Length: 108
Ligand code: FES
Image 1 (cartoon, rainbow, N blue to C red):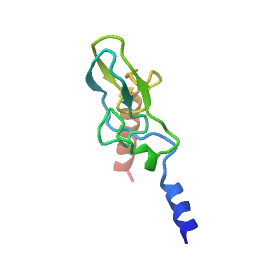
Image 2: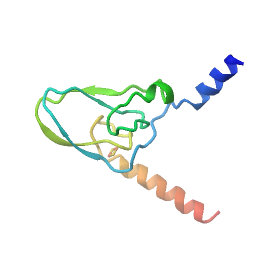
Image 3: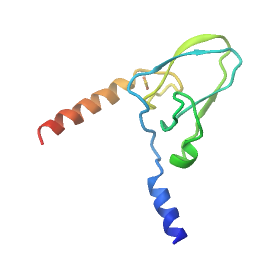
Image 4: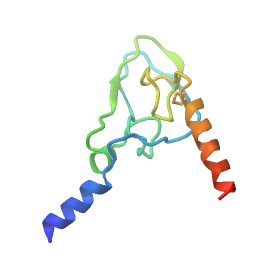
């Protein structure tokens, strides 16, 4: 029985990040402060990690980074960026994919 519970739990764990939002977060960062950017998309403290990946996506770790100066940046929310933790515009593909899915659903 316990083994079955573990198998079901593993099936529910994600190996791919999920979009936390469709647009990036504008965030003020402080020089020398250590941040943990959520890479899985499940954190309730977006765009930062709250530890939820341990249960929902144990194969995805947060990205730790420390800015060298105070700055305002756009941190990725769709979790598809190729320039983590920063937005690279990949969210436009996520939005496009969602629109196509929605429109296809209208004609079913
Ligand atoms: S929010 Fe992810 S690339 Fe822009």
